[in-house]
Length: 224
Image (tube, rainbow, N blue to C red; front, side):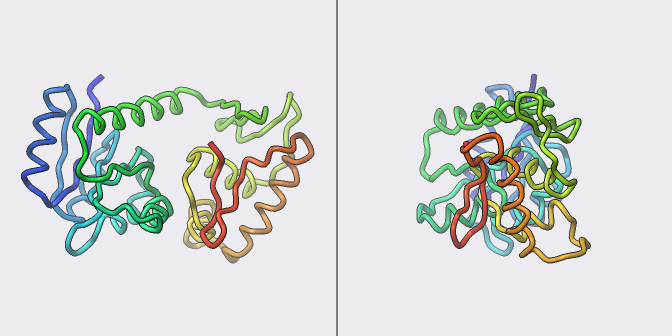
């Protein structure tokens, strides 16, 4: 299978080098040199996006924020930034991983392939059993323990589905609210706190292992 990678970076020399390398490995390459071009190219169905953060105008974080709800493929940031807050910001915007410059081509390819394979496995399975014994059926929209289906509302399952499909990724309440309820949803993102509390309570009837981690001052993430 030939994977399609969208590479976004304003460093033309780096773009040319990476394109040569990945094409030799059998990948199809799309490229963009700025944020607006990246937003447009993201609609061409890439299997993975390599996205530079430090671009003039619209940076990589803003690109990720704009496209994340329309693009489900892995997004890997290319960055020279190593501060913890930068990593948190990237994860909050919907990124899946960080590759810190300078990097080796072998490490980059290994990270890319790992994310592509994980995404393939996820798409092939409509059911997934987590470490705490919970089975989530993404087609039937149910979560259960030993055949006992949790009594989740549509919105509660929407939150559980969203978080569990992005394990380890941090989302703030506004992002969760927008994804589950939509931009025109009626309510308030602060209600996400109460909904997460209810989900935890229903899961807590079957296990002491809480799969939803509170990242204080940031939001929530599903434990890997």
